[in-house]
Image (cartoon, rainbow, N blue to C red; front, top):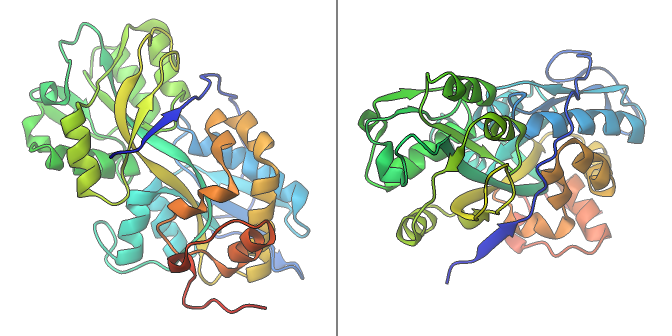
Length: 340
């Protein structure tokens, strides 16, 4: 039996969380006695998604909560794949990424030529594949995308990875589309509104601003998946789950839309200082309300979500989760784990 996860997410989104960029990727500056760098880089995504505002709030929060951190910066990127590549090169301290990209990074598959030393510090919330078009586009199912002008997500993003996996699993390819473009979220909204694009794809937490923006001016239609399609997808990949975009998530969305999704991971490098990772993990889980003020999806963060991790936990994160009594699956203890 498949497990359906209902996501009740408010559509309101706090905007304008722009942090002054202090230091480059990979932090820099002096390192405090706690192991914390002076500047903390957080690899997020485009400004129209959920990662960026959450990362902005997280950067400010870490500067307030951790001794030695002067500034935390949300870096705009192409998304999960690029974030993990930056993490592997140790050009960022913290990376946000979907579990499908995490799986490929850990195993050196897909866009990753070699395995990346990724370590989980928190499981955040479920991203949902949302295929958005307008009600007058003549699209009612995934098969109807054939011959249409479709954006499959930004280059280097987990949206594109997810869309590629789903398209191939359902017996299609990008060649079946009239044109397959690779646009950031905000650009998809603009292109659909200007009749330059028929379909945009988002793999984000429901309630994202760029889809809400589209719904405010167009008759939004989210393409549903059939039960059979959902079964094919979740059976084919260990990191995809059945879910739903609930009615009311966007203006005009009067019924729930059957969908597929994947968990989001907050990750750091295996070589990151154990005490610093402990402090980051603790700060994130003790300031969920602050992060949810930036985007409601962050309100789903909880210690018990750790069971959904793909990459091993960092020892510093284990220190925190054991402290609060979270159950940690045996397979998530990394090879470098040593108890104090």
